[in-house]
Image 1 (cartoon, one colour):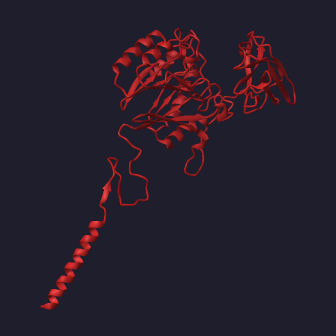
Image 2 (cartoon, one colour):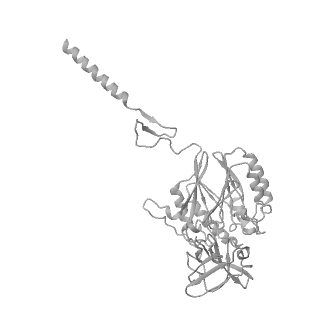
Image 3 (cartoon, one colour):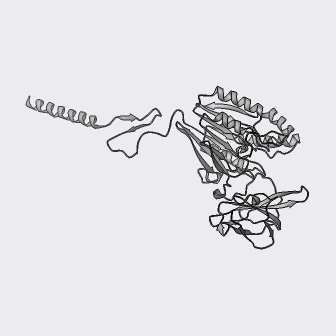
Length: 411
């Protein structure tokens, strides 16, 4: 009897010990509504369990100019790279085909080629027209036959997306026309309660002198009571503007004509990855040559580029000073006189560093300029030097090394 009693006591003790041990183990814990399940103890090998996720959070990509002398493989390859990034959708800012033709068969071939590239995307692609896409009445007609509206809107997770048209052929005026303004008024009124507004158009028409004439002044007035972000292209150079407390992004290229001098010149092949969070968007510029597959390779492509007539170039560099002081952050432009058109043609340029020094580029990074006589323009200096028609600076480019010492009088 004593043995049985002792055995019972031992068994009870063991059961109590097991029960106590189990009570000290934290149960598997569901951290949030995203499905994360992990054991949480007094000390843990992680910082916290608040995932970077929200029911209202989403990502989209913006692609920029493909044309204006597009280079081989880049845009078509970018579509496959975007599939690696996996945004919810993609929006363009125009200049999708080379255009500038009234030949219907050529227009069809160019759009067929482009559509073939964007159809490889695993997510929707939203078209926005540029000047290469809507150059004349024939191109406008063909756009309408293929894509219908030249401007439109959509909403996603309580964010409004405005895809505008800055092209008004055959007037060759960059503007938001009155018809579009009236549409915009109605669209904004119907979407007064959205948490954010995104605006996409091709040209940075807010840099024009007369914002009343081109309609952008009224666009900004209509947007004044809401939070918004603007994306454009056209210039083939990245630049960020801040207007009325809102960010305006002028993207570089996604395969379009570019001297590709690098991020310090704003000349890169890129996509913009935008993450919309509860408090607002977070924008990341992603250079295409940094998006590699799981074997560290760029996707293959057979896209052909535009063949250009390239003249021999010769190294050209120099220094700009104003009253002996280095003129930093300025663009030095070389302009040739065209006897046929009786106009100056912008041929090459360079950008000054902190010491006022620059290197000239015509076709590719710091390749110099062709032989010839040039009018020189310099930005951020006296107004007279800002235009090839008014500048007094002239320089010859000869075979071999060319060095320019440009000392301007004090302002």
